[in-house]
Length: 422
Ligand SMILES: NC(=O)c1ccc[n+]([C@@H]2O[C@H](COP(=O)([O-])OP(=O)(O)OC[C@H]3O[C@@H](n4cnc5c(N)ncnc54)[C@H](O)[C@@H]3O)[C@@H](O)[C@H]2O)c1
Image 1 (spheres, rainbow, N blue to C red):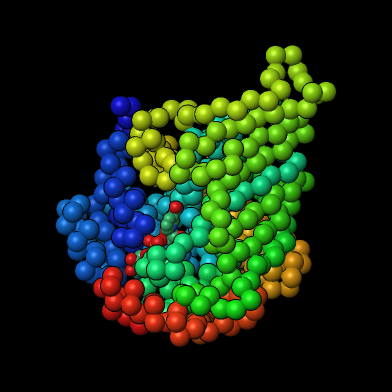
Image 2 (cartoon, helix red, strand yellow):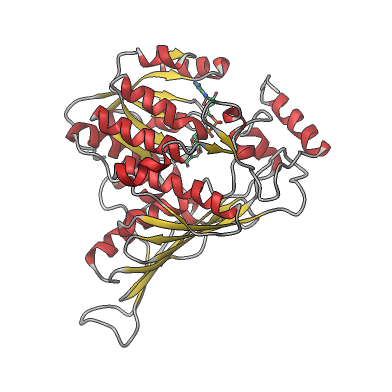
């Protein structure tokens, strides 16, 4: 089994022992990392996980940051990553943040400034670009075989049974019950950005609402959305999600000399074949008109195959560790991360006006981003009443109230999992 490139061990602390456990278990010698501390508010679960890994545990984030370590991985609540990242950077720690960087545009601006000030490594822990099929599409794209991207599609649609959804969303104010349908867009968008190295400059969002509240859960957000992104090379990307019946994890890229996609099917849960095809009248000598094949990762195949989320749980830690060692920001740096997170936020603002086009600022440029510095509009209850924050509805239908049936099921499920809050 190959081990990843390394010179010194990177000591890592993880915040959040839900999804955070994937990072904790992947922070091993194989990527040159060592887990040294864990932090969570849910003390019972924290102590249990801490014991399993035999590492220090903290319920207080400030105390956790005093622990002697090089880097922090954030898997705390979806909408609270940016302030946690800014604190960690100020404490001299490199940061990797799970699948979203910022919950408001203002937080995105503040985060870019904090990374620049710190000189430290920051990475968006988006795992979907690192499936074997998405890495292969990036490789093919970089050979120039399909030319420049003109149009692309990305889908991450993950329906769940009501009990399962409630189990991972304990409490009336849990972010999963309030997240607008466009916010979880990076699983669909990041692979396309990774494959084509383009950046979004304009978005339109349309949300797909239920006609009635979700009767079986306490969810306030809409179940689906479509986002159109104009990219910086003029191409158009269509992004679809989020919890409509019909699981789908799928990507397609059209170029001006051909197209490629993963074959429809179970996405990273299945083998995921890649198809590359051309028009008969536009073939170069030696090119194959239409081919479909099962790709593998370019390197570290065994390590990726044995990791969760289609290899992503290995690759995110690996890329983060290499970025720290080389002192070079990773591909999924703060600018790409904040821009993609902001696509979800801007698409929501667009959806609330039934699809008006909105500009995505260039977060690399202080001139372009400065005017968003005070834009802290948010649908999440924990932001309500917070200084500088304004309120957005979580559904295009406005403020929805849960049904009696949904509330009763929620209380039963939360009791079963030992959740003691409201
Ligand atoms: N990439 C993926 O495939 C994938 C899968 C699942 C979740 N995620 C992402 O991971 C993140 C966490 O997801 P989750 O499902 O574990 O969410 P979660 O809400 O279940 O867990 C978050 C954890 O953070 C803890 N926490 C919250 N505030 C804290 C604080 N102030 N100090 C210490 N701990 C605190 C909570 O107690 C909880 O255990 C989210 O951003 C989510 O989008 C990504």
